Length: 159
Image (cartoon, rainbow, N blue to C red; front, top):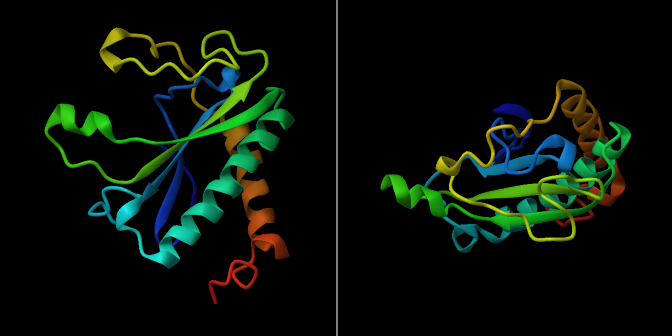
């Protein structure tokens, strides 16, 4: 996983084995640092607000960044999951998958729902993760958002 951004509570990373190939729109994961938080119901109110703000920023940066990289993302999907942890007898932890949806997708075709079969099927074997250029572009957009008044702590009443 390539780290894109982190806060006191969350890590944003490019998924190295994506569920949506970069050419179909890309895949980013936002995960909680405290793995005892198994789902959003366990977040404090302040953590929940920070996560909502972060998902908005990441989704926007993915959409705009991939467009700048030549991938015509028209929509972003967000999914809370963690079901597959149960297959390994593990405890899930809160993480949000952020999927870019490109109008030119060839596998995860928009506007259909993202197809998520088990990894053992080989469905994802040829999917490309975000490139270094994609990640660099997305990081710049994230940083700019956090520096803006729209996403400031005061605007979001986090001070």
